[in-house]
Amino acid sequence: MAYTTKGQTFHREAGQRRALIKSLARSLVLEERISTTEAKAKALRPFVERLVSYAKTNTLASRRLAIEKLGDKTAVKKLFGSIGPRYAKRAGGYIRVTKRTKRGSNDARKLAYISFV
Image (cartoon, helix red, strand yellow):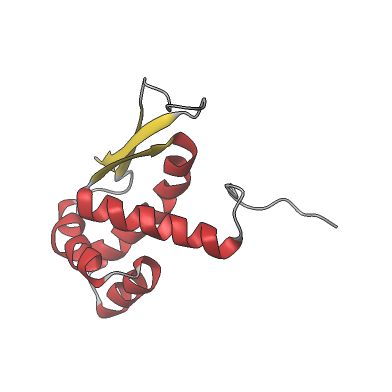
């Protein structure tokens, strides 16, 4: 029996989908604002918000969890050094998805900016 999958698949296998989200999250942490499609931005939001919640606690266990999820030590260093303390008093909602007006060049994909609040 075919069950529905949680979240969007983006027409990729599970490993490719995890690599896509991990790569987008790494870019967002390092650049603090990226441009991507609206669907990818909406799928990326809960992943990065969980990482920021890890960074707020700033323990060894949370740092190891972030390294496992993100896969890049320089991005984790920035996440725990500057981004986590910035949202120490905030209870959630660290990410903003803003829709862009200009569409993609060859198709009708909707583009969006994703950035930290």
